[in-house]
Length: 157
Image 1 (cartoon, rainbow, N blue to C red):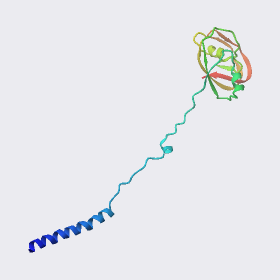
Image 2: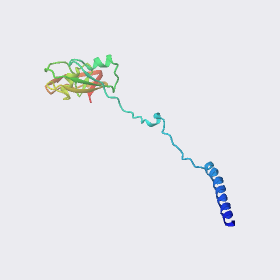
Image 3: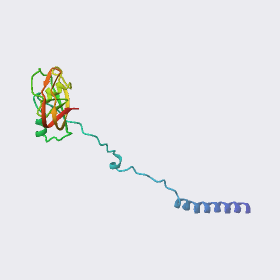
């Protein structure tokens, strides 16, 4: 009987140790750290870029002066215009590469080689400071006149 008593004592000791070890293991149990995603505001990358220019479809006889005054454009401002094909016509432009702001944009664009009467096209002009002199010339079948000092100008970009 001693042998069975000894085994019983060993089994009780193991049970006692196991019951003592279990709560301690639960108390010191390591819980993995959970990381939450960053708020949406932090996840979104802000990309700054220049806004797309507004594209306008206009008559061939409008001048840059019309835009400068109506839209309160300043030096450096740009406008993009789509010109439909058009029959050649004579109009008024002054300058070469840089034109007075009262020059017709479509006619000046043909003169500068940016668009043509036959195909039309897209022209972007930029408002500039006035010039002390504007040189006249003939280009692409369009004549531009010479002019002295004028307070505002434009060029194609």
